[in-house]
Image (cartoon, rainbow, N blue to C red; front, side, top):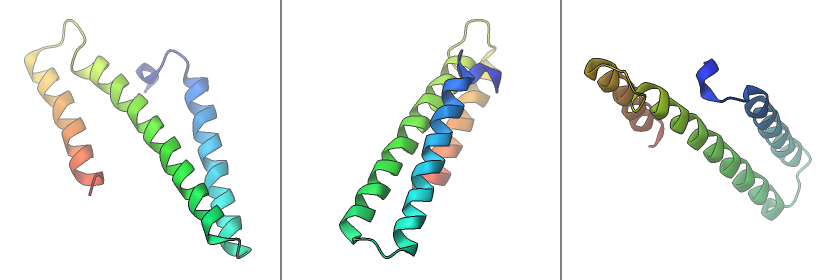
Length: 91
């Protein structure tokens, strides 16, 4: 997965921030915090996950669909992987 980003450290930091956001949601629920504040935590976390997804999808498309030198079969496989992921998880 080294092709995801020229700076995988940035991706890891992003994932760790998301993990912190999920932990904050857990604490909010466990401590019976105000539902509006908890809703904002969940919405912010969802936004952060969507941003991470966008970055990973873009990297995949650039590496496995649009990169020069790929065969038609490689391009088709790369595109099929993205389509499968979106079909599975966008429901």
